[in-house]
Image 1 (cartoon, helix red, strand yellow):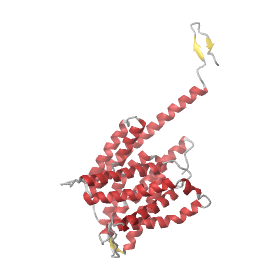
Image 2: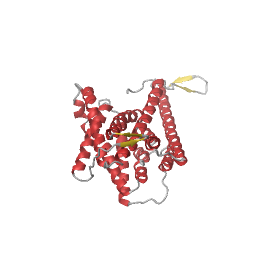
Image 3: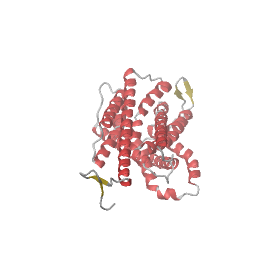
Length: 346
C-alpha cells in the first residue's frame, strides 16, 4: 500500500486502511469460535496455537518466496524485525495470554491484554512529553468501558497477582506488535513479515511444548459449528486461513496505513466480532449489555480517529503556514509617512 500524494489520495488511503483494519478484526474474531470448537473435543490450547501458526506459516511461505525472488537481502536487512514480531507479537503474546487464563478468568485476562491501546497512548505521552488530547483520552476511556461491558464481567472474579502480571505481559507484547507492524518499511512487504513472524512463532510454540511448559494434546473428534457437525480439520482450516493468514496480513497492512495508535483502537472491535461469531457458530447469543459495549467501543474508536485527523490537519496547516513564510517573507514594514521601506538583506 503506497503512501498518498494528494489530499484526495490521503482520504482514500485512510478510508481503505480503516476498512482493512475492520476486516482484520472480523477474521481475527473467528479464532475464539474455531478454537473453542476444537478445545471442547480434547485439544489443548498449546496444540491448537501450534497447529494454527504452523499451518499459516506453511501457507504463506510460498507467496513470500515469490515476493522475495531476487531480493533475499530483505531478510538479512530485516531479520531482527521478523524475529521480534514472531517472538513477541505472535508467540509471546499468545503464550503470556494462556498463562494468564490459567490463573484468571478469560474475561479478566483478555481485558488486561487489551490495555495495550491505553499503554500506547501513555507511551506516546511520555515519549513526546505531550498530553493526549481530550478526544483521545475520552475515546480511550469509552473503548475500555465498552470492552468491560462486552466481556460482561459479572459476579465474583478471582484475581491472582501472578496472573495479572501474565496478562500485563501479554498487553506489552501487543503494544510491541502494533509498533512493529506500524513501522514504515517499504523494503519488507507485509506478506514477508507475516510469514516470517508466524514461522518464528510456530517454532517457539513447538519448543515451549517440547519443554513441557504447555501441554500438547490433539484430537480427531468431530467438531460442532452452528447447526453443523464437521470433521476436526474444518475448524483447524478456519483457524489457520481465516483467523491467522488473512488476519495477520490484513492487520499489518492496516497498521501501516493507520499508525499504531489508531490501529490498536480499531483492533478493540475484535472483541465485538468475536461475540458475533460466537453467537453464529456456537449459539452464544450476546445480551443487551454486550451490544451496548460494542457501541461504546465503536464510539471510542471514532473519537480517537476524529482526534487523529484533526491533529493531522493542524500539523499540515502549520507546515503550510511555515512554508509560506519561507517562500514569501514579509519584506516591507510600514513607516509613519505611509511609504514602504525595504528591509535589510532583501
